[in-house]
Structures are given as structure tokens and as C-alpha cells.
Image (cartoon, rainbow, N blue to C red):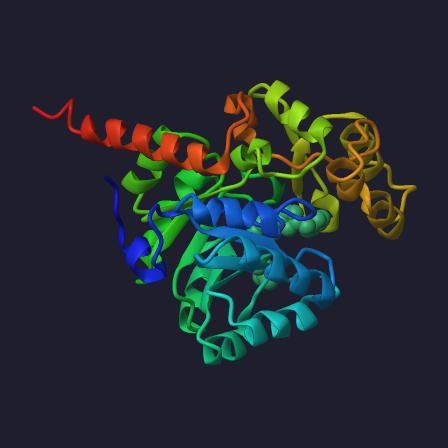
Length: 315
Ligand code: TUI
């Protein structure tokens, strides 16, 4: 059995979070992960408080276990969904794509454990000071909006810089990844891409197909010019976007407009040409569809076996 301080902090069986994936991580997927012993997370993405309330209600109808809400700080609705999360007193709020400090007093007063995703040591230090209960150090191997650093170099540096528990994210898709993350100083992991193909994940079947088919070099990043690089599976959309980025005749506004709606077209409509299929580099290792609970059990069983042999080369 594997048990870390994160299990005690949150009252969960396995120290694993399911990443908050926009248009994908809904109340049903979050409940399945929480029922499987991890922490399911509903993505508030770019939706309003009404949408989030529906998903929280759905999740509560499917599980009695703790779950979280992910607030994407670049969302135009960040303020209203942040307030709703406080009113609903969800167990955990994770944040992404920015500095969550201004919302933290409100969440803490509501008794919520705030666990921001960070891509740098400076942001990890800042959120610890602001009262974060733990921090998720996310490397650029992950899907979606990514930072510059890899998980391998970010996790130990964050671990050295803060006193709160650290979770690792980015490039973790099996038990070896969990074991490695623990060796780097993490006491938990966050996984997105592997949960894309969970039975309970309602993403479009074309999205699942793309992840299952992906190989090691199937993903690429775009969006550097706009200051928010995004990792996705290579397709017509991603290639066209990258080309447009290098075209000085195209304004930043036009580029932003090109990206709008692309994730919806992938996740909901399954449009293989014009959709943006966000996924992490680990997609090359994600080869089978399973129930969420089985994914969790399998990953931790494998991690246990790997960790048991961790001392094999010691003399
Ligand atoms: O947020 C994510 N992943 C995401 S957000 C997203 S939606 C989106 N779509 C298009 C463009 C931009 C976003 C899809 N995937 N992961 C967590 C994450 N947070 N990764 C990196 C960061 C981060 C970046 C900067 C956290 C803090 C931060 O602080 C910047 C500052 O100094 O304010």
C-alpha cells in the first residue's frame, strides 16, 4: 500500500488528482475518480457559475467523497466561479494559468484547501505565503497551457523551496512516473492525459482515438508568441496555428481569434481538422480505455512494485 501525507491532508485513499481539463473534466469524471480513491476535479474552464453549479450538483449526486474544482485564472468568469466555489465549500480548489492570490483569503475563509498549479519556483513560494495547502508543480510535458520547465527539473526545485506538500504533474501516465515523482520529492501526482480515455470521460470518441493512436512525438506546442504556450496533438489546426504565429502580417488579435473555440471543436464536436486536441507527451504511452478506478489501482500497484526495487543497485 502507498500512503503519503497528501492522503491524510485530504482524506483520500490514493495520492492522485485528476487534472482539470477544460470541456472534459465534468462532474461525472470527477465523481468516478473520487469514487476510485483519488481526487476528482471539475474544470470551471471558461464557463460561468451556472455551469459550475450544475457540475458540482451532478458530482455530489454521484459521490460522497471529496472532490475539487479547478479555476482557470485567465477565464473571463474567474471571479464568479471563484465565489461559487467558496459558497459551495468544495473540499479543494486548484488553480491554473496565473496567480491566484487575490482569491485565496475568500477560499481559505470558506475552509477550502487551495492547491495551485505552478510552473516556477517563484510562483510556488508566492502561493505558499498566500496560504496554499499544497502546490502542484507542473512540467511542460503536460497537455494544455504549459510552462518552460520540465517536471524533472521543476519538482525538486519546488520541493526545496517550499514547506508545503508538492504534487508533480506533467508526463506521469503509469506507476513508473509516480515512483519517479516520489523520488523527486513529490507526495502526490496529478494526471490528465491518461484520464482522457477513462470509460467515464465524456470527451468525443475522436479525441480518445487520437490519444490512443498518439506516439512519443505526437504532440507540439503553439502559442509562444501570445505568451501562453499550449501543448496539443499535431493536426491541421496545430500546424496552421504555428504557421500563423510566424507570419508577421497576422496580428495577435487575429491569432487569438484563430484559437477561440478550437478546444470545444475537439472535445465536444470531435472535429479532427479544426479542433485543438490538448494532450501531454505521455499520450504515446496511453494505449487502453479503462474505468477511472482501474486506472488508479493499476498505476499505484505498479508504483509499489517499482518502489520496492528502488534500492536494487545499492551495494
Ligand atoms: O492551466 C493549465 N493548463 C491549461 S489552461 C488551459 S485553457 C487555455 N487555453 C488557451 C490558452 C491558455 C489557456 C488549457 N490548459 N495548467 C496549469 C498551469 N498553470 N500551467 C502553467 C501555469 C501557470 C502559468 C503562469 C501558473 C501560474 C503562472 O503565473 C504567471 C504569473 O506570473 O501570473
